[in-house]
Length: 450
Image (cartoon, rainbow, N blue to C red; front, side, top):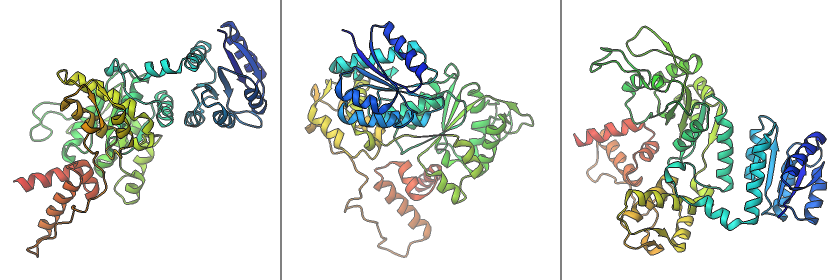
């Protein structure tokens, strides 16, 4: 069956070239030089897809997209942007565009996109089934096809073209490391190492040697030399997770590596050059840390070259069913003796409406427990426990000491214990509430036991 395409571009040469490309594939093409005329034609005729430039005189391509989405929400709309038009592409995906292309367009790639768009237009149920099937769990990374996730995927595609530093922000559990891995996998560095380190998980006094390496005898216990993570990641990507917890002194040394690529191991007088792309991630508000003097302003600007925000799960609830199916397949692989094989519609509705303060990570853990402790083939709503919320309960009262006065040390430790209990044992969240580093919290807990 012959498909009908509407091509909208005010550049006559581009318009004619696109018409010739798709005519070869036996598409019937309607060529229009402005968005207003295109809108009139869409409302009178039937098309299988729209291919539209963004920047045009009068009504823009994005404005046309908004109008078409109101009257023909299922009509695939493919946007063509100028070189470097990352914001235009992200805006288009958020507004509901099927896909985007950057000029100069590759004819073969554009033909493939249009073929997929037309096929999904004609067979929506089959396309949805295929796109959501978690048959190869290990090859999927970022799951979801809603507007927020498609906008994120678009930004990742653009960011992956560069080797400039990236600053990934978002709430705890939203998937910042997955985003960093996706950037690396889609970049020219994908054949080289991806190395990740959590800045809050290693004591500050050991972090310098962890990052830059050390020579033999550099400090007590340094019996053998070590390369360091920057050297291990040479040619590839280094993820500095929870960068907001990095000590102020170490920030200055990181700044030099970002500026010049020079690494000096602890205890050495020599430097060596590394080629490493740095991706920093944090759930903290770095501008606030800068204003309070806890994070170097020059380092912040050096890291914030390509900012990328990972939305919380509550902002893309439409992806929860697909995520739940994905985590179900992964959990079933880890628990092959479990009878669980599917999630019922009532359970999916319950999952979609839940608050998920711990974001995607919390959802994954929730599904894992349902599989491990499941006794039926299908998970239904009555199998699911209530999802914990961040909202404080009436029972969560501050334990004022009955045998006051307490020492300040006793009071601080009691308050830390209370915050940890109020955070459902989540040490990262408790440390953030207390305004201390995670390593400091661990030291407090160890001191309490000792």
